[in-house]
Length: 200
Image 1: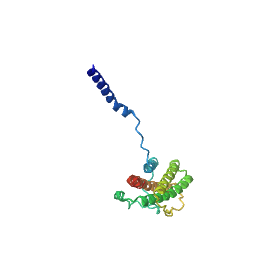
Image 2: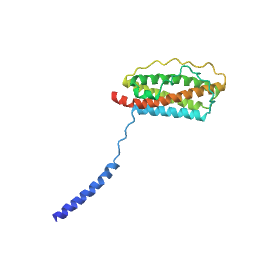
Image 3: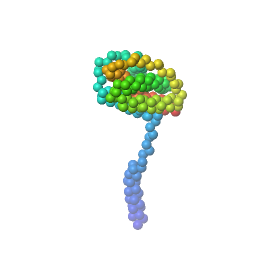
Image 4: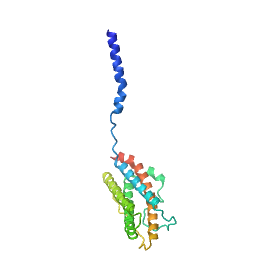
């Protein structure tokens, strides 16, 4: 009888052990809360998507006169090789100053577009809202790591745009330039993520 009891106990134990992975797998896995850097990279990706949609939905003349905006951040000197050498505080500060400069340009474009009843206007306003949201997120992160706030360059905006065609060309140039910036900023936020973890 003792042997029978032992075998019954071991059978019950085996059955319980067999159910163990089932119990553990059904228990809720704690969700990893997105970090500030996750939010920054996601918001930048949203802005890039909006920019691409605007370029796609409103087909602009590709023969754009270049350098209509002389005060936009210089993107040609930023390469993929930079990402491994990025320093946390100066990069966050520079990205914030760059975004502030783009904000000035897009707000100017928004005013001009209203006068010409540009069809891209609703999405343009959405872009400005998303940009402000990204700047607020970025500023919060800068305060956490004590990154200085830079004074953005004074925007050099084109004179009065009398024709609808001028507005189209300006919109195209700004969007193309901003798309490059968003792509670079997104990669920069991803690259800076481990450096943020190291200082927090």
